[in-house]
Amino acid sequence: MNTWWVLLGGGLGATCRFAVEKATTALLGKIGQHRHCADEPEKRLWMGWGIIWVNITGCFLVGYVASTPWLAGVSPLLQAGFLGGYTTYSTAIMDTIGYTFKPEFNWGYAWRATVIIAASMAVGIAAALAGAWLGCLS
Image (cartoon, rainbow, N blue to C red; front, side, top):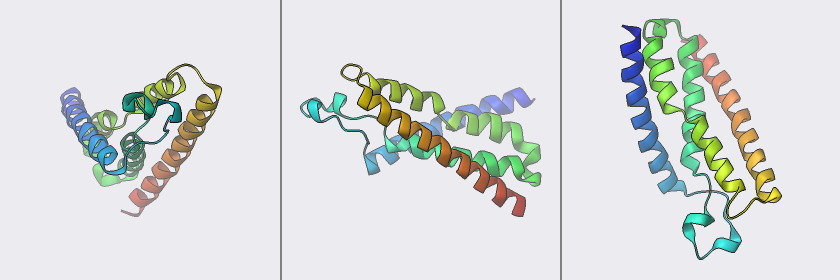
């Protein structure tokens, strides 16, 4: 039965990720503007804030769910399913690769992309620890 809960949670999590990522990016915009591509908006923008927001909130929630005893019974639905579908590390990496190679490979862009991913990872770890701490208080 756990497989079906993971399947259900994953579908719901991916749908939520899509909606939250689009709404957050629409609200806050995107980071990493390319000055030399100002006339081509699709090449001018890199990773949306929505992807970063989704990953950080997902890390917080994973930490919370993992450390909250009363949620242990629904852990497959929430952790592996919903939050596995909600977080999007692979999308963040693909956006970073796209940022580094647009319009051609550039070491300056590669350095900035590396710093942004490293900062996102550090904030994600801090968010997971904060979620775990809050979960232990529950």
